[in-house]
Image (tube, rainbow, N blue to C red):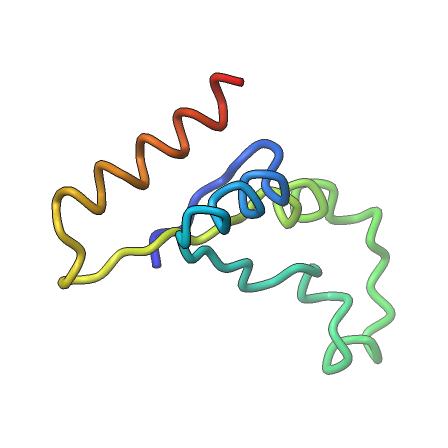
Length: 84
């Protein structure tokens, strides 16, 4: 997967799903909020950049079997989404 920062990430992901374009959000929540780190009592206000970026990270398909026409298709659909 190819990791990107995307405005309107969730809406873009839903849009791409309509065209069978797989995307992934690896961490929907910052690591400090995961069960394994809760005992640290981390103040989320100390991580404003993390809190902003976690809402924008989206992974696109990226592997050796992707054909050029598939890459062009994905790029076109992303462009179409942002042109609306």
